Length: 317
Ligand SMILES: Cc1cc2nc3c(=O)[nH]c(=O)nc-3n(C[C@H](O)[C@H](O)[C@H](O)COP(=O)(O)O)c2cc1C
Image (cartoon, rainbow, N blue to C red; front, side, top):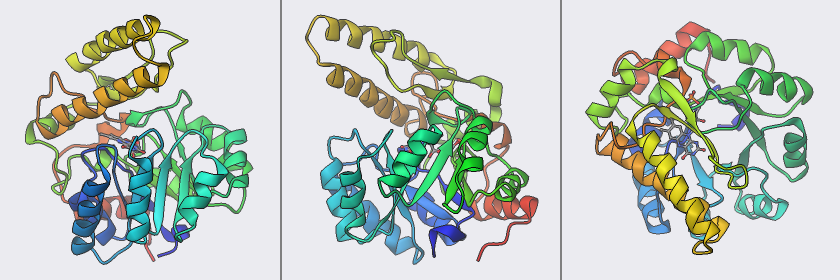
């Protein structure tokens, strides 16, 4: 299916967006995005084979620029002729976009300002996601509402998807009416039956609301880590301690800035596994958007997507 026809993207969620969830979303006519945040190249190859066994529909792969395995992951995507890549990088270089397009993939990037959006379009990006600070996981400082006014309202005839804080179909319909191609949702799918999330974690997500999430950011302006929106728990305190340790090691010259930041990213990936897969809901990270207010029970992906379609009177082609 062409990118312009997708009204819903099931945003990649590290550990959660596995072959089962990605294929279930794809089978309902939305674009599932397989997460690779925790993967090595050989893991991705196995995950792609499994996803393809579970769906005949297209799906996307999320590649995160700072992943040390990036080049290996790209090669696996090329071997599998992946049609859509969602690139997690602030402003991907032209050469990087071109290298992904060289095997026929359409490349989707995240834009956090009009200038960045225009630069990404000049660099050859095929579509944009505007993800506001309401979203779960790594976030920027700007709300979805402001990104929409700044970017969506000023770029015409270009596929733009809106993400962050979207929990019901009526909201998707509003963004479509404003000119968006579609919306990317993450948190709305975490408690689906097809999600690999641990039952204890699912119970927490179901019981919490927007006010139970917070953004965990940098403790030092010269040491900028990307802020992350999570459900408040002990892991938040642990992250601040970990950040202090990384900052100290950087100041003592034991770690380069990049190594120190990477150690924190690894902390999130490991801690996220502990929370959402192992079910340690106190000490593990529970990344979630404010849209968890709309997660009320465990449902199948079919039920969730049908509900979104009905609420928004959305028609999938
Ligand atoms: C548990 C979790 C993990 C996430 N991991 C990733 C990731 O690995 N890569 C990425 O691009 N976005 C990631 N995101 C963001 C989602 O893809 C999506 O853009 C976001 O959840 C949208 O906001 P919402 O949660 O309000 O629907 C993650 C979100 C959550 C909740």
